[in-house]
Image 1 (tube, rainbow, N blue to C red):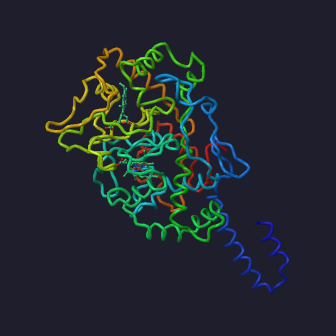
Image 2: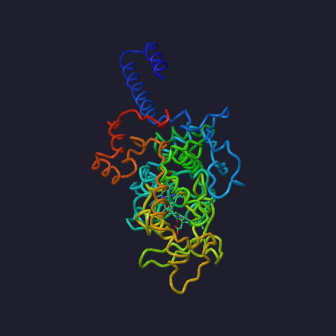
Length: 430
Ligand code: HEC
Ligand code: HEC
């Protein structure tokens, strides 16, 4: 760009006044280009993905070399992954990253997707139930977004079947981001940075459309892969990756007595199904009927999607209602007897894998110890240092938290990247 403009400028033989005016115009144009270039999107795939000849990113993991889940026994470690979403371009994934962290997507610019799905909290928040733009608590707890690429049902009650469709929920729910399609489009179409970024991510399209927003958010979320924990190293055959205690915990977890692995099936630690386990509501809240509504099926009353247990130590409180604020209590629930929390006068068809395991206190501790080995945030995408709207990245509260909490790793990362005007460094893998 510089070269072209310089040539135009220096070969121009117009009178002086006009030349100065022209020079100024060139400077202004250049300035716009340079600013836009701050938000130039990545051309490389995130780590763990390879760029195919078609120019899209394909996930590579060691699990793809194993055969299917069948015939591997309960909790078998070397099993293949279910089908997953990938096939997005690096620019689409990176555009989704900016959208995800930009509060401009909410009606009043106060919260972003990342407000409730924070990278250092397992892409969840630390609330029992999340809080949207109104300041009120919403109905349920924010689930982790790690490994959503492998899931085909979304929300606790499985009411959505694609990430694209799922995005409409938070964007337009009055209690969450409270936006509407026309305001959202208007916000993005009138932002010169976004116009250029969408053009880069969707070169064939004439202007920004809603579908491109949903596609980019989906593309970004499918890059949230967590399959490099110490557990995974153990699963791939490196026995020493886990301590003897952790292995003992794994063995309780996948035993026929505890049966956790029937539903929280390795390697994703979910079987992608809905199950009725009868986890309690918080004191004073009425029963959440969950998947009964989705499928119009009374036998699924109080049924919820089996959540992944990846990065579980980071995403407390637990269960759809955030009823348990620590992992030990969430695990102990299973030991308190089948249907122990069914409200009086309710009938629920508790899943047959929920048994009365009578685990000892030591065994419960071992399970909790084991769950700690499922932590891996090595592919956490980089949080942008600024977003195209110019609003506080993630949200105001988040920025306050990180500036107050100087010791957290997150703060270290963000201070390294200051000052704010510095050129954006795109994906962490570059
Ligand atoms: C106000 C907090 C909040 C905001 C903002 C928010 N979410 Fe969520 N998210 C939640 C809650 C709570 C749920 C579970 C709701 C339910 O199951 O009924 C959820 C569920 C999800 C799920 C389903 C995960 C699964 O495994 O079922 C995805 C994906 C998701 N959100 C992505 C996003 C994206 C993308 C955005 C931004 C467009 C966003 N969220 C904004 C709180 C939020
Ligand atoms: C029948 C299937 C099933 C079995 C067996 C099962 N779970 Fe779950 N698990 C679920 C479902 C469904 C949920 C979500 C329930 C809810 O939110 O109300 C859940 C939630 C959890 C959570 C909270 C996760 C979060 O993100 O909030 C933990 C922890 C957990 N299970 C651990 C275990 C352990 C440990 C065992 C074995 C003792 C076990 N589960 C056995 C289906 C099962």
